[in-house]
Length: 255
Ligand SMILES: [Zn+2]
Image (cartoon, rainbow, N blue to C red; front, side, top):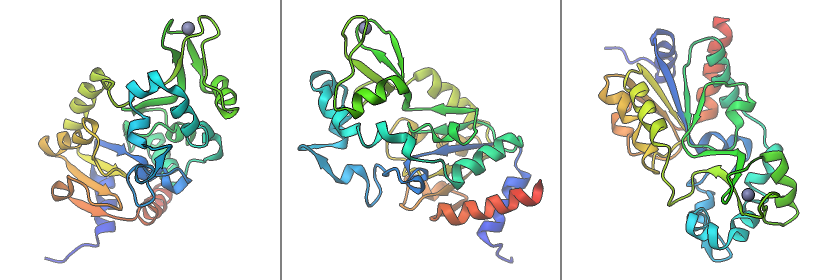
């Protein structure tokens, strides 16, 4: 048996698979300068005022001391306009526009898939794009909140004075169970799942790619670190830039 180059095998799979989906994590945004949560320079490897990133994203601490989250997030999640989508975001968006890729499921909250032109994106951990008042549920958009947080203030509701929270899922909050169910059903019927830049460590979203495996589809993983599903992966690559340069070239040839 002649051994096919893994990259060529991936391109052949992209060509021959009928239902392709993508599952993305923080690793794809590191190419845009956004720190990965668990990579070598990940935000979880540092502490802020004695709290680690996981504690800062706990709903209990947020309700008691929202100033810690907002001060921490000021230069990170409230500075997203300084980050641009990268080759991975743009290539996935182009694949969607050419009907080669269905839904993108993401653990990211940075809106970069949408800014790259993707319309079909489902966000497991919510989004920074919208906010709401914890008291009266009034909704606020990112642009309204950014100047407040950037000036070092904790945003409060203009109607009732209640605390405003971004619509991201904090630790201690339940993820959207309807989204998880529909994602599982979709991924179970997927022929080829691209798992990109996720170490697959945060459940329950991290277990979802197994749905494709159980359903008889193939999983291709591109991630620097090992993941819990490497042994179930049909192909495993380390370097997103390298893989997506090849995919982008291939897409150009198809056009
Ligand atoms: Zn309110």
